[in-house]
Structures are given as structure tokens and as C-alpha cells.
Image (tube, rainbow, N blue to C red):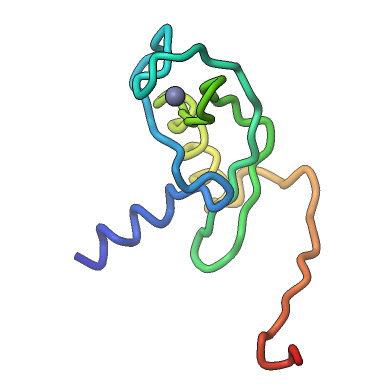
Length: 107
Ligand SMILES: [Zn+2]
């Protein structure tokens, strides 16, 4: 059970938690039949406790209701990149510094 949870967390995009994976590109949004726009999103995920940002990830967004989809082949590329990163086979294009706050310090 623990392993399954870990797998799901690895693949989760923290910026787009409702992103749905599609095996192929449909002509219209499967949920509301509206047209899609091709968009580029950032994929932010946790990997072994550290935060990773992947830019330039193509996705589909339904024009009317904003439903978001990612194609399985794109997700496979994301996973290959994460594997490469784990083996230190790829260098990041840049590093970000992220502010961290504690709610205990807030008045
Ligand atoms: Zn839709």
C-alpha cells in the first residue's frame, strides 16, 4: 500500500493536480465536448523529498471549462527525464531559490 501511494505522489503535478492522462489526442474535451487549446505548462513534482520543476511541457486545456489533459507519451517523457535526473544523467537548465515560511511566525 505504501508503495502505491509513493508512485502516485511521484507522478503528481503539484501545480496542476487535476491533470488527466490521455492515451491519445481526442478531437474534443472528453468531459464536455468543447474545443481544446494547446498549452505549455510547468510540471512541478516531488522526487525523494526534493522539488523538481520541468518546463515546456505540452498539455491540452479545454476552452470553455479549463479541463486539463496531458498525453501519455508526454508523461512518459517526464518520467524518463525524472529517471535521468535520479541517475544524475542530466543537468538542470537553472536552479530556483524558493522562500519557505512557518505559520508559527505569522502574527
Ligand atoms: Zn472540458
